[in-house]
Length: 327
Ligand SMILES: Nc1ncnc2c1ncn2[C@@H]1O[C@H](COP(=O)(O)OP(=O)(O)O)[C@@H](O)[C@H]1O
Ligand SMILES: [Mg+2]
Image (cartoon, rainbow, N blue to C red; front, top):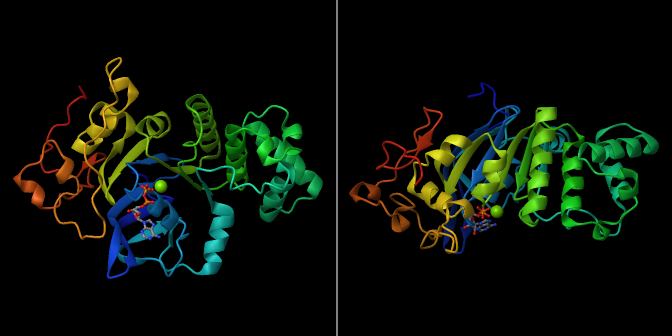
């Protein structure tokens, strides 16, 4: 593993206080992103992916949550105690974020060029003319033809894929060391999604940016990421190199996610879905969080399995010894 990760989260537990209790959204999450590494988090809706992403940038309102254990560092800064001043410096220059809905992130009443020039001039001392030239160069990096023409458009005049390319171009404009992308391609159709993912990867590789890429879709993560963390009910249940996880998923939950991929299904049969639903996070979980849905559940599962973090590959399951190729 990289000796100085750009993002490192160690056994982080976080809850949202609610009337007479708490939602235990993160239960001991450990993960890291090395410099220049593209790392995925995959898991069903409600598994804690967005809370992890928001927390990495301290974007959750301070009064809304409690950290009950663990630590979180970005570029060596302790994000749980960092000053507001350092936070804004980090957010402006070293860390960038992109989200699912590219329409809401762009002001609908402003032309693309004006919006881009404003962001660029926040980071760099450039004249309006030079900032515009830079905006064109950024769009060309994202393989946008007629970049000068695109600057004259309003967001609603562009396709979702084009808007997301513009936001990715902007995210890379400050040359960030860490990019956090939360479901950035989920609203796009599959072909456009693939193009956008390839561009994201190309830019990250070109600039040496570490990426934390979040998706509920294993197929998307597998196209992009060097390593992947599988999250379930606020815990990491498995992690390892993407290629290895795809061929030898070890955790029964990971196997379930992979069986849901279109390429795993026999022709003309419905896609596999994992029966049951994610656990109620307002109760403290004891035991393995996946036990209630697990096809391989056994007596040991009343104790929560630890994720072994010693090896490149880690699995939190009492009954996994030899990961087998997926059937
Ligand atoms: N502000 C909040 N207050 C209470 N519960 C929240 C809040 N934000 C998220 N949660 C809960 O935390 C859990 C994880 O949510 P989230 O990280 O958004 O999941 P994912 O992104 O994996 O779909 C969910 O059960 C969600 O309902
Ligand atoms: Mg989410």
